Length: 400
Ligand code: UDP
Image (cartoon, rainbow, N blue to C red; front, top):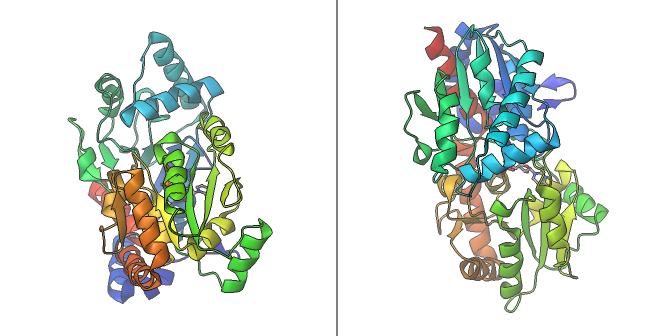
């Protein structure tokens, strides 16, 4: 994040990670001054990858890496196919027809023609630009960074994807559970949050009140909040059901805030399907306002991330950083952030989610205790400085 025309520097992280870690990371950047790297993904906005890249690319530049960011272009039918691929990698079904493969490969090739990638390292994010690698004479290593929950990918689709993956020099998944049978070396980097971004920086009570008032969000009752792209894997209907159950025992307001990424053609439909659930205490909002995300995560009594698949779930770490306990689906990367009963709760059903909402809304001291541990977990493991260090290690490993 850049503040007042100045990039955030590694030294700014010292207040959170201490002088030793700061100096260690500083030493690792020294040999890489001027290293030229580019990230490639498929959306500039919406979803965790764009959130991560907007901060990570700036932090890399602030330590002397010339890190760029290319966003591939695609038609709606291309993103229709790649969203089906995304769903199938998370365990859904796909009819992988020749037509779909041809459309995928043609659009990938068009992007190759437009992008002259001769960097010291190229990092390609997720399946949409995956196939680009096949068309280049590589000047440096190419790394595929897959952010998806790969615990149960469709075998047919994975077979097709892995033909592309094998052209890479390394693959990064979020957690070791997503390891696949591949000849390419596999690494595991969990995503991380930028504590200086508008979404995560400190907000005063007045700033928080102002944002909530701006959207007429009532604060007379405790807030139960989920913030997610409108996507069925995030189980928004399950959240509403759990909230309705919980409301039989406690009074609260539910806010579901969501957005639609430019590479996700299913989002609008999911959003519309939720609108009939609106009522006085069930607020469903689609707004592009990161300060609102901050205010909601900060003011909420409880944040939910009731996903049924989740590669990592940046929203979990974001809320935990604000000292808010999170009730998360017991899946994928959420399990690496929430230690059940310690810094939040993991749930596997609507009923469990409802019971935990009731428990947390009723017990302010439990919320405070869990919230403090949640913030400490993020300080220790999920700040962007840790991810930067992993990337520096990777660049150094390829340089030697
Ligand atoms: N997000 C947002 N506004 C919204 C919904 C989501 O800014 O209305 C952000 C959220 O704060 C997080 C990212 O989008 O930074 C979602 O990342 P996550 O890893 O949780 O899920 P993904 O969308 O990548 O599956």
